[in-house]
Image 1 (cartoon, rainbow, N blue to C red):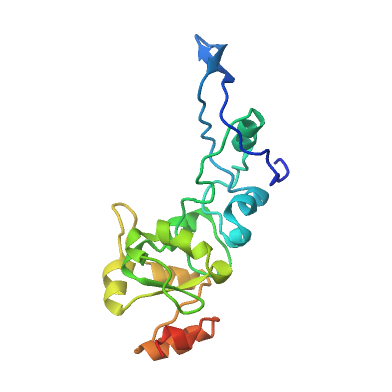
Image 2: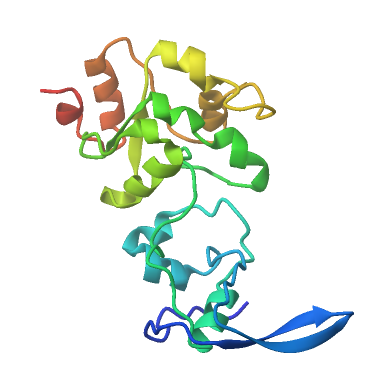
Length: 213
């Protein structure tokens, strides 16, 4: 695995690149006006994550291929290529916290696909996004919040209809809250908003703001 390199060359305009196209089993050189390198990303390199995702990058859990460490990015930049304007965005999902372990088999069972029916607040007790856009959008908003942590709130109807359900065909019917608790994550319930606020206050969440007082 190559060492982290957060100080990549300055962005430059794309230039024609030499490449090889395989013809009849033999590589043939060619000159291209544009080349797109789609090599899996750089989520396995902590240095590049910090450079592009910001100081909270070390709080992100890798929910994908850990072997992608930015080789394609370095190759393209070394050849004079330019990066896109969206290097600070990513594809991901909300997952419970803390987790004693996070393996590939847990990626789907622990993803909070139902969050578009919930309310997501930060540790200050403030709602931070429009949750209906989906957790793949909410998770990017959460990364910029204090400690990159939040609390996902719902009532019993949402739990019954969306948490304990199959979010899409072949995803599996299971209780994602139960799976989260079994994996070591925090989970709380109460009969009133004030009661719930008091419980999550133990996690460092502002109970007064969350309770609306």
